[in-house]
Length: 226
Image (tube, rainbow, N blue to C red; front, side, top):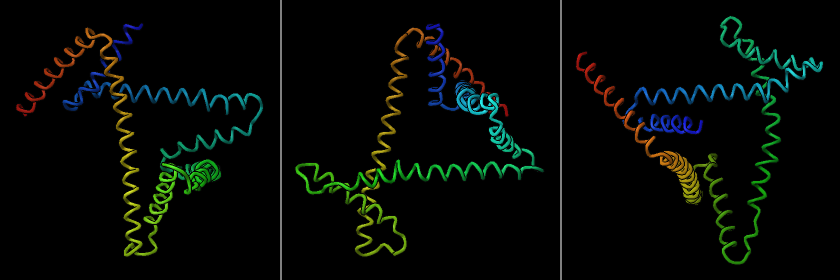
């Protein structure tokens, strides 16, 4: 099983990397497998973690109120029937309303208040901590002023807003750099796995290259014939 897993993972990795040449059937095969398996996995996860414990088992215990949630869930699918598609508005409105009501409190207590507390720092401090705190306060204030659109941003307000843009660009750049580094770490992990068995990787790489060569020749001949 370990050998089979190694062959399959290596083959799928090379199929995905074949997109670096151009879009081809091998890449589409790996892409469709990934999407299909992911969809099946999350459907099974939804059944095991949500539907069965919160609906089936509760109704089996006599909690018939849960059938109301099941009916609302079924009404979601009336969207595919034009004549009764208006019924899907009821569960959608219920979900949006409940989600908004619950998450406003969760966001306020879990994000907003914590962020406000994190900016209430002591700027009178020793060493680099004082510098860091001052930069934090200035960056927060100038970034908020940049989003103040009730007055034209010119003069002193324009200068402050441009400083806010500077801080925003640093933040976006750091986020983008972190994303790139995380993707690079994934690529390094896949590369190390390809190097576990050079023979397997070499055989599969040759097979992929031969397939792409034959497929490319056939595509060119078909295009010339047309």
